[in-house]
Every structure is written in structure tokens, then in C-alpha cells.
Length: 216
Image (cartoon, rainbow, N blue to C red; front, side, top):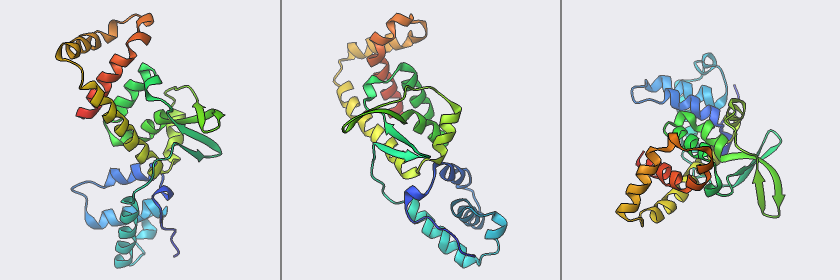
């Protein structure tokens, strides 16, 4: 049987990675994990994996683990199913809903496809090296589309996001204690804010989201 073994981290999809983390648990049986790894990443039924010699299956699994550990480069755009997607051009321009969704989805790596759907969206306009992306909507179909995105691109998008968050946190830490207290008081009242106040308080909410994400 000729298997197609991934050789680059971007040969692996978010969907395959999500399936892998479902079985890659501390108490997982080693032989079972080897078989499932080969099945998931080589896209063959588990019954066919069982016909492979045990030592060969182990070698294939080790090759796959090495690919999963590859370092990928951050890219601000990529193509998927004929559509070009771009990373958020400016995090500070995001809506409150986008901040909240990112903060929520980043709590669990099982939501990686949902994180990807916020961070990368279809490019609608280009200006030389600049671009605009589609407005955000929490669409299940768009989240599912991101399950086919390359894991290397998406994982580095998350790393890049955290790097930006850390930069913003350094600025955030310059706030005095009294200013921090004021931010906390305002964010505790976020549910009662009238719609016309949302735009003027986005930067405050961003600081709270950044702080919460950093803690997690």
C-alpha cells in the first residue's frame, strides 16, 4: 500500500489536527495513537492501518510527529478553494464582537477553526501591498471552511496575534493603578452600555480582552 505521508506542516489541515488532538491524550494507548495518527494524516481507514507492519506504522507516525513540530512562517494571506484570505489588517479596528469571539474561542484549541474564521477572512479589495477583508460574521459555514485551511498558516496566525497582544500589553501596563481601576469599573458595566457608547469604549474593552487572554 502506497501512503501519502505529509512532508510539510502546511500539508496538514486544521480538520486533521483537530481530529488528532481528540485522540492525543495523556492516557491514550500508544499503539492506538500510532494507528490513529497514520489513519488521520494519511487519510486511510483504520482497518487498513491495521494491515501495516507495526514497526512500519511506528516509523510513519514518527515522520508525522516531526512534521507537526516543524516551524512555519507567518503569512498574512493564503488561498483556499480559490478564495484569497487575509489576516486582520489592524487589530485595533476590530469590533467588540470580534474581540469577544477571539477571547472566547482561544480558550480551547478545539475551536481553532473558529479562531481562524475571525483572524483570516476573504480579501475584497487590494491596494498594492494593502488589502481590505470581508466584514466579520460568526458564520458556521465559514468556520467549517477554515477546517480545510493549512495548520501551519493558522497556528502561526495565532502566534502572531499573541505577539501583537504582548506588545499592546506592554503599553497597557503603563496605566496607573487608578486608571486600571477605572477600566475595570467600565468593563463591569459592558452589558448595560447603550449602542452609541460602544465605539467610544472599544479601546477599553480591547485592553480587558488582552488582559484576560494573557492570563489564560
